[in-house]
Structure formats: C-alpha cells, structure tokens
Length: 500
Image (cartoon, rainbow, N blue to C red; front, side):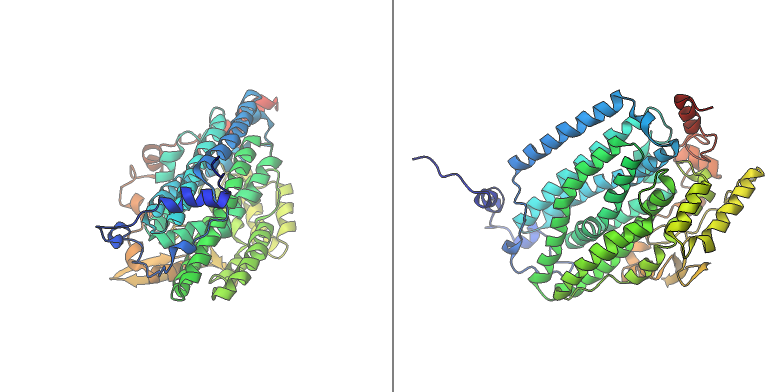
C-alpha cells in the first residue's frame, strides 16, 4: 500500500514541532536561561503559530528561484553599463549611505535572530527565527553584490564594513542594533521583529526602492523587491510575536507596551537618515518623507494599533511628537550633513531652485518659513567662495547618538535638549523619548560609545579632524567626502555623458 502523502500542516509539524526534545536528566531552565529573566510569562509554547508553515526543503526551492532571477538582472545591469543610466551622480551618495548604514544592519539582524532563536523554549519560534536569520544573511549578500558594480566607478563605497564600525554618523544605526542585541530574546523580537520589521520597515524599503526605480537604478530596485518578498514573512512573524506574548499572560502587556514605546522611538530616530535621502538625495523624487510617514505609519500603523487595542496596547508613546517632526526632520538632518560635509563619507550639496520649489510645495507650512531662507543664505555664501562648514564637533545624544540637531516642535528655532545626572555624571539627550529610555536603564546607556567623546579622548586617530578621517575612518580625504560640486564622482559622470 502506497504511503499516504502528508498535507502541508502535517509535514510542517513533522519537520518542526516533532523535532523538539524532552529534558530527562537536565533542568530545562538551564537549557534556556534567558527565557525568564525579562519577566515574560509563557504558559503554552504550542500556541505559537507560523501562518507560512515553511519547511526547509520548500524554503530553499523558493529562495533558489529568486536568486536565479536576481543575479540574472545584476549581470544584465553590469553588462549594459547600468551606472550610465542613473539620473544624476548625486544619486550614488544615497547608495553610499545605504551600503554603510543599512546593509550592515542586515548582518546584525542575521546574528541577532540566530542567537535569539536558540534562547526560545518553543520549537516553532526557533524555526521561525532560523528562517529569518537566513533571510537577513541573504539580504546583506545581495545588497553588497548589487552595489559592488557602483564601486568600480564611484568613490566612497570601498570600505563599507570598516566605515560602519567607526564613522561618527554610522554610530546611529550601529548603536540601534547593538542595543537590541544586548537585550533579552523577547525584547529583541519586539524591537526588530515587530517595531522595526512590522511598523517601520516599509518606510525604508517601499518609498526608497521606488525612488531607485525613478532614478534608473534597476539593480537596487531588484534587490529591494527581492528582499521585500521576504519582509512579508518577517512582518507576519513580528505580528505573531506580539499577539503570542499578549495572549500568553496578562502580566506581559505592560512589559510589551514599554518595549513598543522604546523601540518605536529608537526606530524613528534611525529613520531620520531615510527621511533626508528621500527629500534631498534623490534627484528624481517619488514622494516626500512627510507623505511616506502619513501613508505607511499614520494610516497603516494607526490601523494596526487599533487592532492591538483589544489586547490593551495603545499607540506608542510620543507618536504625536513624531507627527509634528515629519515637517522638520529631513531638513534639519540634511543641513547638519551639509555643514559637516567635510567629515562625511559622501558628498553634499545645496538643493537646486527646482528642488527648493518642490520642498516648498510638499511642506507648505514649514519649509519657506524655517528652512528656505537658510538654503538661500548658503547659496549666497557659496557664490562668494565662502562655502559654510561647521568646524566644531557636535554634541551627541547618549541614546540615539544623533547630533543635537532636532528642535522643539512647538518652537523650531530652539534646539531640543534634555539631561540627566547619574552617579555624578551628566548625560545629554535630544528628546523626551531618548531621556525616558535612559531613565529606565541608565546602567546600560552610560556605556554608550559616543564618537565625539572618543575623538576628544584621542581614541580615533590624530589630534585633528583630517587625522581622524584619514587614519581612523580610512577615507580618501577630499575624494570620498566634501562638496559634490567639482568632485571626482561628478567629473567622471560629465565625461561619460559627454557633458561639457
């Protein structure tokens, strides 16, 4: 008699749940030592559900087909000199930020999910984390491969891993994942699996990848959409994590709410970089950061938190502050990089008249009032040969590590500043959100590795900025950084295009 063919549900159970083991001579708590110290209570791991029910054989078949299509497009892009088809050489600077600030986070996510999955007593959660860990490793590999083509023709992409570990502004994304990976397994899942993957990732992958398409970068579009198909599974895992924890025990609700508040705030601070990429760094623009925030958080996220209200979960704390900041954050961030362009690993520039008009249209209540006069002044100074650079090193927020550039939302002429004293030392913060995070776990954040502090202590190369850039960051000073106008990137572009 022929063996009965297993259905998907039975096959999934056989290849995941039935692989678990019982502890006969060792204490289960010793096998999973991190499962209880955060205060989360799990009453029944069997209630964990994975809607995709992927098994390894299915996973590899599915991913292999995606890889074949992806690398075929990469090869075609390279063979047809795809770098000549992008809209403007300025666009490549957005890729430099993506490669140094975002791609290494994919690798940190791979490490984080591999470690976290080992800490869960439930086999369903372990398998789900294993799948996501492999996804994240694939993402960093495809992103590096896609952008390796640009490295042949443009400066500033040659040492992305080294830069991620050392460059001052890249401590913002690096510290985000260091914070998450230094947390317990359940907090990591809320931080990355839910707050970042489910609530905030669409703000990175969807509008920016659309921007890549608008600017002729089909390699980036392809890896973005290939990754986004995995993100659908990741977002489902993130939502499952939240619902599972909330349904297991009522004592989990306040713990999960605190984590949502924390990681929503940290995530929005991280996305500051994406906001300026969308508003200032894409020559052909798709939508403003303000529009993206309204679509992907206020509408989509608002609906999500209405659904979670039945579990006792409310909107993240300070969500109303972020709604105000959508009018300001991209402008304040790009101005900071423009004035510190000599210390960045990419080129900066003043928006063109057409781009200033576009920003006025997209931000009618704030741009002309607060930001356009600043750019007009910068343009006048540059025309006189007095291009403005900030020579001093900026003060940093202890939590998000962003320079103290944000303003009070009710008074955009006043820098937002908070502080705390812990064991006799004073710590500085850019916002109430970052201040609250410090107050909850000061022992963790007094250890923050702040680039400006380290530079002043002599731990980052020589005594002046150029020594730091050359010896510690390993930048080609004046080539990888400074103003876009007259840069080698721009001059090569003009030569390829036959532009006088």
